Length: 428
Ligand code: EPU
Image 1 (cartoon, rainbow, N blue to C red):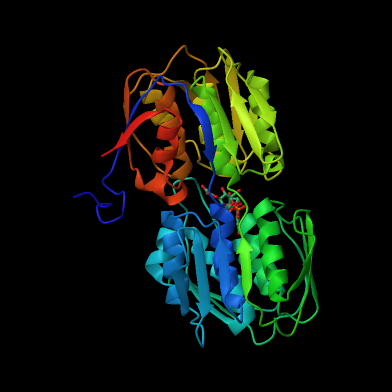
Image 2: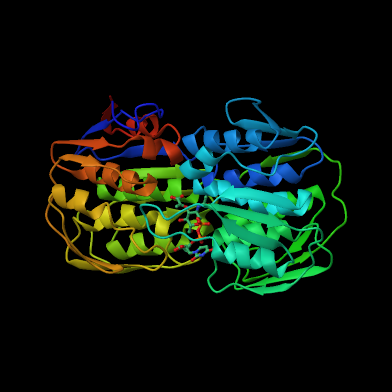
């Protein structure tokens, strides 16, 4: 038994026979990174929160455990609808083992701090994609008047009264922006977050919180203003989550590398601007309609340079996937990763498939080769898993992707969706 044997998908692997061009249409699920935060936001609600378009993925299951551990009642309405209701008093300590398993659990801090003035959290450490401190979250809470103690591997926050403040983030951290925004909702006075993250998922949270009675504006820009309110309303919220731009991007890249012709549906094309521009630079044809994008692959792709930046720059969560694509492009590409300190771990696996990649610090130099060859490879995180699946779709022969539970953390029914597009793959 390996150490992941009790995790769903822990012992499973995906076998892909490469070389089949993907063709047809696919619909993406709701955005993982929005849903997870709306689930923590629901902790603030006085009534039921109904969240629609929720993907059935492992990370959502983990977050269900986290908020249930804090006292929320959670049930599935239908296949993709979550119903969350707070019962009586909320706890202040998220279950350690779930915080360890998923860093996004730290997003309970803001809602708990503003609602009950107290939080205990197992200090999330670094992970495979790099150091991932929460110092900016904590600095923000302190600026709002919370007291912080870090002891024995835990973070303790307490606040009798939070007061609005002006907070300038050293880096536009998504998690810090979201947590500080939440903490400021019931604070006295106005909070201004400058150099805030601008990701579309943050607009989702602003919308959700405002439906609960919060007064937030500016999400999607680098300045967010939260006017503290004394109470939230008692309305039931019924909220449909935006489509997952990273899942959409993953299918677009899969279409391009496989020499295919795929329409990716139910997307918000503006959320994919950076990727669309890069794919067009490789020579792929990308047609954009109101809620879909069609990617038609050229005979051979051209090398392109990619610089990963906070939104609206090229997303780090598509960096491993586009690197897979560039391994078989004409020429040399340089990929610069500016978000995580070590998000090139998957490169060794692509090299096992024949790719020519050199990593130096935060850059990868990819020399395009004529084709990849199938191999057994091990995924180390969600997007690494997606990258290896994409490489397998284009490789000659059989690719076996191990560590499949990573893929299941973020991609709903991925093998069914790829099979519908004509891919030859099977889960074991
Ligand atoms: N950072 C700090 N201090 C902080 C917070 C962040 O130094 O207090 C640094 C991190 O170490 C990292 C960088 O800032 O190097 C970016 O972190 P950020 O806080 O922006 O990311 P996050 O909120 O932890 C979310 C997504 C990630 C996605 C990033 C960047 C969720 C649940 N996760 O993480 O998604 O990569 O934003 O866009 O929303 C994924 O889905 O595969 C994934 C990793």
